[in-house]
Length: 199
Length: 199
Image 1 (tube, rainbow over the protein chains, first blue to last red):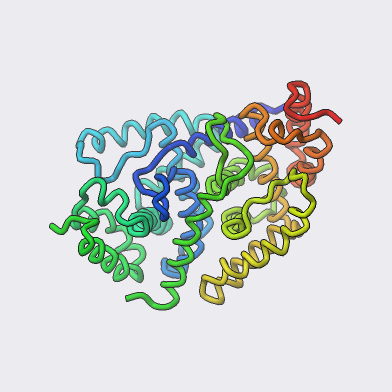
Image 2 (cartoon, each protein chain N blue to C red):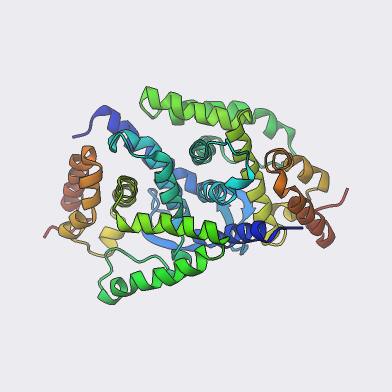
């Protein structure tokens, strides 16, 4: 009934459903619950459409949409690694855990698609292309918006400092410079309200 | 600190977060909960990437990704209209409810972007372009996969008949004919298991 190729594509899409159960540390803007990595990925695609004009003119929007759609799939096996986790072992092991996950998850696809999807994930992770830099900047900006709108979010819960947030937002500074004054203003206000620890 | 243009873009992205709270009738594949329209939209983008080769060769994939990213935003105000709702008034009022929602939600954006996003939504709804037909086929196929994987999903809960499901899946037949034998097989098995009512 199914060719092996189509069976693999369907199985990949079915297993990808689990990204909806991977919980991030950032809340919804109404603070009703933490968001998951699938809906977060959708939000990045929407942000790419809405903020396109602030990226360099020659950014390939289609590529950006592909990058953000695929960028968190490894979390199905590797889990979401919290950017501000205090345990250095979490960050040290992240790359290895995610590589193993990428081998399995993209390996569900037919070989040519495995290569193409894996290349998208590698590109996102490497921050080396215009498209990956734009996609990563959106990833950081979206978490900032979720935190500030929900009244502090993961910053407040985990006692994150201004220096940590500034480091984390560096991709916005380089890839979306139009938005940097806004980001600085958000961070300053969050320091004033106590959501971010002023260091 | 913000130009009016950027302020509108940010406000649009913040308000769009509410799509994560719009609950559909289809469950996650593990049947742990019903899915929301934001994570569903992400799943369609992933399906567009994985199933691209089954669409006509000249389909513009970037356009498809834009369509699926935007296609459910009106539900923030209009709610998700269940395809198999028995109340004819629900379907009669859907277009009007969604038009009012589109006016408000896309109207959050600067005027040129309002026009562009609205055009994407109109295109998806009209099923008139290759890209809209592919996107709509993915929308139907994804619901079928969620239902069958979760053991019946919205079909079983709402006593949906085979004829209703076949009507609903017609866009798959026309836009993704490679997948039609698979869809028919899934429907037949769901009839055998009692998840779909054989009529």
